[in-house]
Image (cartoon, rainbow, N blue to C red):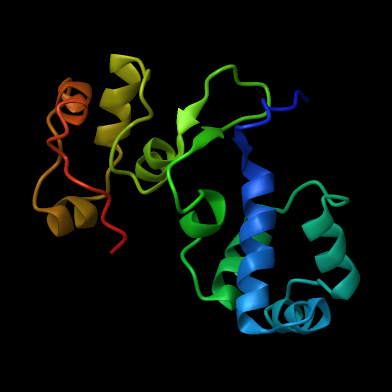
Length: 160
């Protein structure tokens, strides 16, 4: 596994930092957070929390990520992506570095990552659930996602 350049955030580094920050805001010790997770069926304890936050435990499962978000009272995307725009590496071996705001929009299902092939963008928009289209009131037109986003017509990020 390669290491991202110094100024580029790696997914697990972001998750670790966000978990540590949010645990601190709650005033929880590692043992207290482990108890909260254990109550949800995720077998964490003080040692697992310490090992994860220090990087000795390299990753979390999707189930653990969702449980962490639940006990920390945040949406999972807010554990995965930095709150402020900055360079971000989606996969360990990727040579592509994305702006974290673009990654946030991708995870939220708003638009494909910049550089996505047109056929992949069609799939991205075709897989939007009907309830999401109804909530949004529209779906972005196929083949125009990048023209619209590059013109800034999509507006600012909406955390709601």
